[in-house]
Length: 65
View 1 (cartoon, rainbow, N blue to C red):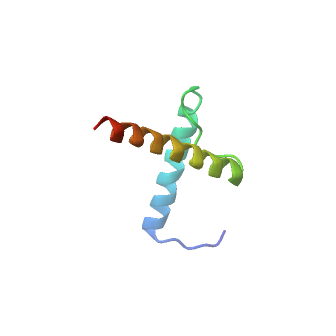
View 2: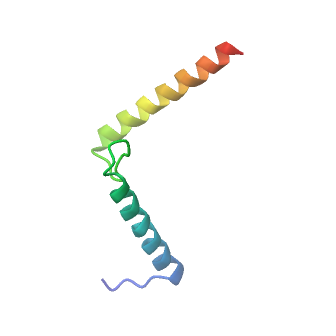
């Protein structure tokens, strides 16, 4: 593509690509999400769901103390 990269940039891109492929293959298990995501709305709604779950978990711990 005619883009010159510093050696550390090329190593980083290669390492990230390898990590992505590792996660891609592990995602074939039903309990493992894939490294890619759906639409931006799906990602945001997933984040909201996780945030609610974390808040609920911590509020449960707070009440027990």
